[in-house]
Length: 355
Ligand code: TXA
Ligand code: MG
Image (cartoon, rainbow, N blue to C red; front, side):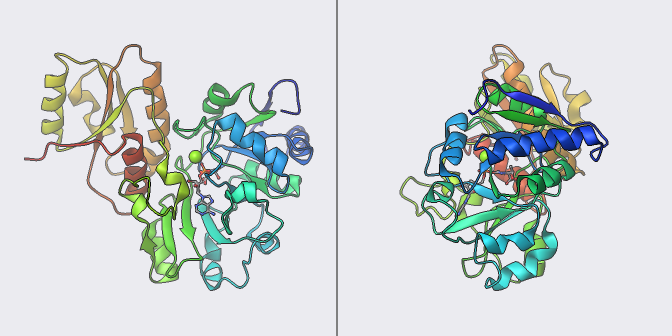
């Protein structure tokens, strides 16, 4: 840290009010001086430092407790600035997906020498993201340098979708936290590797696989999206081998209709203390303690926004041994990203009740 204690920087609704601008200038100044600043984005909150300053970037890994072989992505205020840090213009695929920027997407391209090896964990490619969130956009424009940022959680925990999550994890470990509203997407960005042939989806997110196919034609899906990586697998998606999104109690995904799910929980209720994440339509019917509403079956956007905070909320209940999450087997659209995060959160533990 370059400051003695973490500064909490509250941004109010009217972003262009001079008070807010001054606060974001102060935050950008911390970045330019080599400090660390957490900032809101529409996906999740990020923990940023000047990507061109290797010493500053090292502080990100320390604050999060993140293994140094897991690369960071860089954040820019405009995709047209990507050319300064990677070979963007010669990438035939970037042109095709440019309409998706700014937005919940990260493009992996061949990096230039000005991006230090610590950012990419020694890889020749770098991930570039341009957030749509207006606070993120103003902050990044004021920084005038690319901002390396992973999600602003302690390594392994669910990503933060509100300022309080960031405060819980990183207060005292970073120089500042920009506190704004809840993340509107609620899941980290879609990561597409534009260097591989055809482009490869490394992490599903707010920009769907179907959308990418419509712009790029053929898109492959990394094995890491739906299956567990073995320690000796070639890491096309380096982050995927680590534990992710895990609350304190072990998570189990349960697949089956409401009746099957209800009977399962009634039985478990005799001998286990657990929390349940269930769909809005079923909450009343399940009639249990420690039940969290993830949103409607028909509204994956709502589920995406809620899922990380529901996982975190289970940590607040004393004495629970397990978390059961009701899931469907729909993997289309945004559901692929939700399923991917829940798979990682549960370390691939699925209980299939379907008869
Ligand atoms: O929405 C997001 O992407 C958020 C916000 C803050 O922008 N950031 C984020 O960063 O989720 P992080 O570090 O938590 O996740 C980035 C993922 C990691 O799994 C990392 O391994 C992978 O991207 N990654 C980064 N650079 C890569 C590269 N050059 N090649 C392959 N994967 C890469
Ligand atoms: Mg992360």
